[in-house]
Length: 561
Image (cartoon, rainbow, N blue to C red; front, side):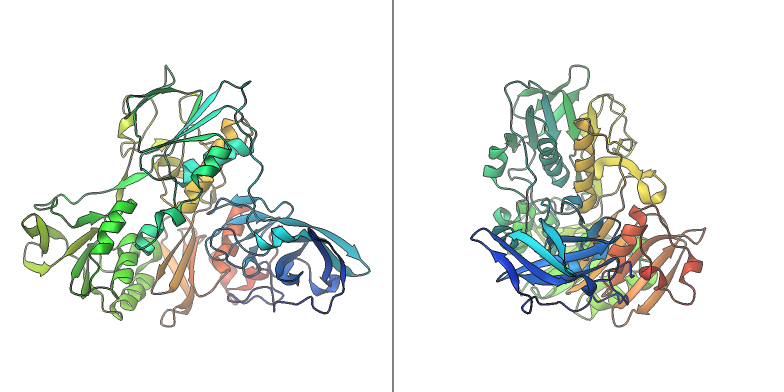
C-alpha cells in the first residue's frame, strides 16, 4: 500500500475520506472513558491510516502497519495539522505541514517542531471490528506532556543550559523526562521565556505570552530554573564554571550551549539611524510593526526567507515595499532559479518591487531618523523603515579562549552525540557544526527551527547517558501570501527536475547531486510528499533520477522498510 498512507497516492489527499462511527454501536461509556468500535478491520489496508469519530466530539487516528492496529490522537501538537494527511513512516507518522513525528506505539514526539506528544489509545480487535478505549479528557486535549522528574535532595549535580531558544527548551524538558533529579538551570539572554521565534518574520503582531512555548508555572512545577535577561560572558571548562552578566558564577557538572545566532548588521554610513531594524527578538518586531502604516514606504535588504516573508506580510499594510538584493531571484541557492523566479513574480503581483543585483550604500536620515536609502551609490529611494535580512553570525564570542573547538566562523564542532571536544560540554542549534544524517553524516551548521529542537533532544539524552546518535533530516518551510513551500534534505544541488505547474503553484522539485541522487525535495500544494521523502531520508533511503522515470510519483506507493 501507499507509503504516504493512501491506497492510491495523491499528493494533496489524506488517507481517503474521513469516516464516521455513528453507525457503530458503542461498547461502553463512563464518566471518564469512552470505549467503542470505530471501524472494521477491513476498513484499512496494510500501511494505511484513516481518521474516525469517537465519542461525542472526539477524533482518533487509526493506523495499520505490519498487521497491527494503532490508535492515536488525530492532530499534530505543533499547529494542529490533521495527521491523517501526513506521511506514514516506519513506526511513526510525520506531520504534513512542518515535519513533526510521533511514535505509533506511544504517541511520543520523535522529531520536531513542537514540544508535546500525542495520546495513544488502547485498541482491541473483536469479530472483525476495531474497538478503541480512550479517556474523554485525552480526546479533548490533544497535547500530552511526558512524565517529568523534579529536583531531589539526594542529587547534587547541576546541568546548565546556555540559551533560551527551542534547543535549550527541549533539552531542559528532556533532561527531566529522562529522570534527571539534579539542578537544571537555563540561561536566557532575553527577558522572555522560550518562544516561537519563527513568528517574528511571519506575523509581527503576535503576542509574546501566547507565543511562549511553556509558562513560568510549568518550569516551576518541574524545578527548571529560568534565569531571564542574563547572558553567559565566559565559560571556564577547567573549573567547570560559567560567568554571568549579573556577576554570578555558576558551576556545572554538564553544560549544553545553544546560544543561537544574531543578525548581521549593515555597515554603511547611517546604519545607526532610528528605524534601521533587524528582526531577532520581540522588541524588534514591535518597533517594526508600529511603522507599518499606509503612508509609509519600507525597504527590505536581502532576498532571504526572512526578507521575502516580511515583504509579503508588509505589502498589504504600507504604501510601498522594495526588496534590495544582490542576486537576481530570491532563494536561488536553496530552491533554484526557476522556483525563485516564480516566487519573485508572486510577490510582484502583490505590488512588491525588486531591485536585483543591488545593494544599499548609504542610509540617509533627518534628526537621527531614517528617511531614505542610497542604492548602488547612484540613486536614492524613500524609506521610513529598513529591515535587514542579510544573514546571521553565531553567538559564540564569549567562548573564545575556553578551549572548545570552533570553526573560524564561530560555529562549534560537535560529534553525532552533540558532544564538543571538551568532556561534559555539549552544543546544538544554529551554532552547532554537526553531522547531517541524510547527507552521509557530513557536518554542517544549519539554522532551522525544527532541527534546533532535535539537537536539544539528542544532547539531553546523551547528557543523562541514554545514548542516542543524531539522525538529522533538515525540514523547513516558508509561507508567502498564503502559499506554503516546504523543503527537506540537505546539500548543494547540481540539477533539478520540476513536476507539476510553477504557474499554478502546484509542483514538486527534485534536487540532484553529481551522482543524480535526490538530496533534497521541495513542494507547493503537494502535501504530504515532502514529509514522505523526509521519512525516506530518516530511514537511510535515497531516490535517484532513474527512479523517477516514467512515473515520478511511483516511489510514494512504496512502503518504507
